[in-house]
Length: 355
Ligand SMILES: Cc1cc2nc3c(=O)[nH]c(=O)nc-3n(C[C@H](O)[C@H](O)[C@H](O)COP(=O)(O)O)c2cc1C
Image 1 (cartoon, rainbow, N blue to C red):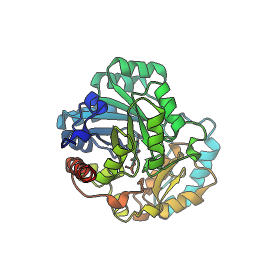
Image 2: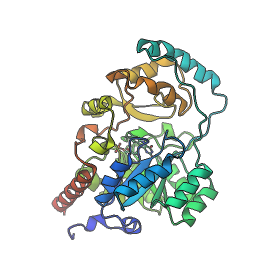
Image 3: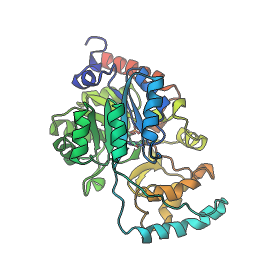
Image 4: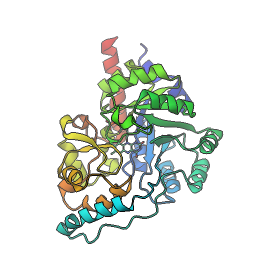
C-alpha cells in the first residue's frame, strides 16, 4: 500500500480531509479551539451545542474560523420537550435539596424553556456560516430542515446504535452514518424505540452497519490510538470519530475535577445510565453516579435531569458527572493537532506491519 493510501476514500475526498479522523462534537466541551486544532491538522473539527445558550452557534463558528480554515462539523442534539414531566421533576428537585444543602448551594435551579429542535434562528446561522458537515445526535430533524441543509451543500450525518437505526438514517437522507459502539463515552445516539436496550460493541456493530447501508460509515466508540483506527478501517469504516481521546487535549479546557477523574478511569469503571441527564449516556462510576442512582426511581426527562444536577459538579471532586468512554485509560495529554498526527502515524505503522 502506498504510504497514506488508507487515508483516502470517497468520504475524505468529499469532505476535503487529509485524515479520516473526526473529533466528536462534545456538547460544550468541544470548544472552537479544540475543533480548530483538529481541522488544522487535516481532520474534521467538531463543535457541540448541547446546553449552549441561544445565539452561541454563530459566535462559535466564527471563533473557529478565526483559528482555522479547515473542515468543520456543527452538532445538534435533538430532543422533544417531555410532556407532563412536572411531577417527576419536582420529585428529583426535592430529593436534591439535602445534597445542595450539604454543599451550601441554595435551591436547585429553575428550568428554562428548552428547545431540542433546530430553531429557525439556528438554521439561518448554519445556512449563513455553512459548516462542511452538520451532525445530529438522537435522530435527524424534519425533512424541510434536511432539504435546506442539503440545498446549501452541507453534508449531514447522525449516529446509529443499531443496524435498524443505520437503515433509518439512510432512508431519511443522511449522507453518512456514524456507527456508535457501546464503548462510546457520552450519550448513546439511540433514537428508535427499544434501541437503547439492544446495544452492541463496535466490533460487532460496525461491519453489520457497513453491510446494511450504502452510504459511508464512520466508526465511533472506544477508538483511542492507531490500532483502533486501523481496526475500524479493516471492519469497513470510511472514517473514525473519537470523543474520549480528545478530552485530555489542553484545548478542551476541562474542569480540573473532570481531568483528575479521567486519569483514573479504567475500562471497568464506567456505566451506561439515564440518571446523569435523563437519556442513556456512559459516565464514570463515581460518588456522583451512585448519588444519581439513589435519587429516585426515574430521572427527570432529558435534559432537565442534567440541569438540576449540574450545580453539584463543582462542589467536590467526586460530584463531577464525568462523561467518558471505555478506552479512557488509552488517553494521552497532547494538543489536538498533535493527537491527529500521532493517530495518523500510528495507523500507518499498524497497517504497514499487517501488509
Ligand atoms: C464528553 C462527551 C460528550 C459527548 N457529547 C456529544 C454531543 O454533544 N453530540 C454528539 O453527537 N456526540 C457526543 N458524544 C459522543 C461522541 O460523538 C462519540 O460517539 C463518542 O465519543 C465515541 O466514543 P469514545 O468516547 O470512546 O471515543 C460525546 C462523547 C463524550 C465523551
